[in-house]
Length: 517
Ligand code: NAD
Image (cartoon, rainbow, N blue to C red; front, side, top):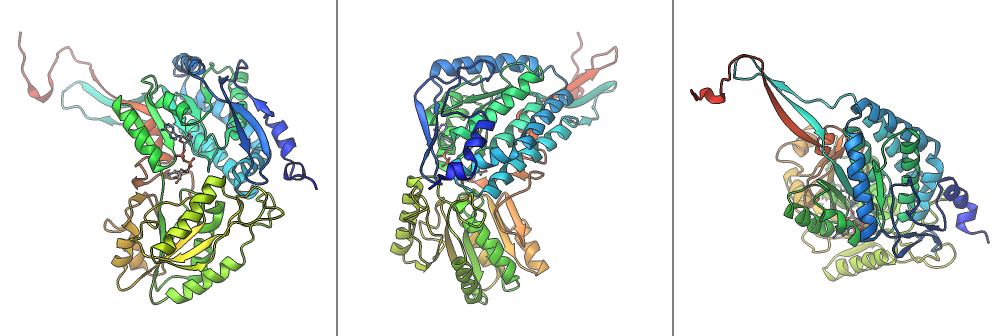
């Protein structure tokens, strides 16, 4: 039988992206140094070894940071629109390589091919955004209290930006950060997830080629590879003024402490525990579509995945029956086959966490509505395919309070007023994405009001999952408080400077202070 890799054109994709069986970062011009131990990347799709990548050692890291620091000094002098022009060229390459890169994302991470392409599309979109932004890095001017003075603020590049990213969006999160940081005039060092090292290599190959062909200095886009110890090299390093870290809350707490200890800046994008409130005025058909996609899409491995469905008692049975029915239609299997809705979890540890969550919810008194389980047999050889499950539960259960990165949906009932549902929705430590399904304008506005959702993202009549690059993305509380992507998220990649210019022959002091000599 043909392997998944050959039947879905993975080998051709790897070739086109310049990803080999073994990859190391000692070759010149790539801005990637790694000569340490090899990390093997196995596909969760079929369990096969895709390739190996060597890890960055301490000595390698020194070369990277030196190259990036030196490159930054030159890059910051280039006018921002010219930096934007290089990002535009990088984007041309992304457009050309969208299919192979989307395929590799799907094969290495396990999300559907459509979602893999969608992720590359997000990269393309943020680059477009960044090109426009390169002509709009504006500050404000304000009136001075002193006569003959002009006051304004301006933004300068920050320096070397360290990016640490998670396995579930192996390419998009990097580009959300880099595309903006590049036009802002920064150099970037990226440590991708050790679970998806080949997608990082593929992206770095594209960036290094485009930067070098366009005369950009060495070191503007650098890659370091390996596990958390490699990430720590950056979090400890005073030469890296900003660390943008995406991943678990556990990781974020460690990184935040380390970077704050040296008074560096952090941009944290951490775990979520997202809910949809379903009121008696909800459109049930749309609720089911939004909730099912939110709970099982990417096999429940999105930071914005729907984990809790908070349903009013008047429509509870109707919603429950419709969702349980919809789950019977879900096809689980190879994510490169477009007939399947749900692919595998990332690895066997994730499968264990999923099983533990299902055991725990029963232990705590929950009621399983749709049984879970690990799939076996032909097509499921990787051992990472699981059945999306639903359990009736209570918000105060310890397991419901916790983000399980798997397709487990908790059904929670509320009665009475919308305020009760909002209290449940806000009654978790995380604060990333939230939604309400209602055709009642008053309910929608109350959900969005100051006493409504406490999340970074609050949607009406859309699910929790997915976001457009034009808005600032991120969440509150244990989600970390960071914002990246659109709106004014670019400001974190720059330092603000307030300038006051005196064009008189006198030297008046502020606040009317006299200092006569
Ligand atoms: P993870 O925390 O295990 O790892 C994320 C990254 O952090 C990896 O590159 C890892 O090597 C690195 N890392 C871990 N410990 C570190 C340390 N002490 N110092 C430096 N680097 C360290 O997360 P994961 O399993 O890859 O991803 C899943 C998690 O990411 C989920 O919690 C999910 O909600 C979250 N996530 C959040 C967002 C968001 O935008 N809020 C987006 C994607 C994923």
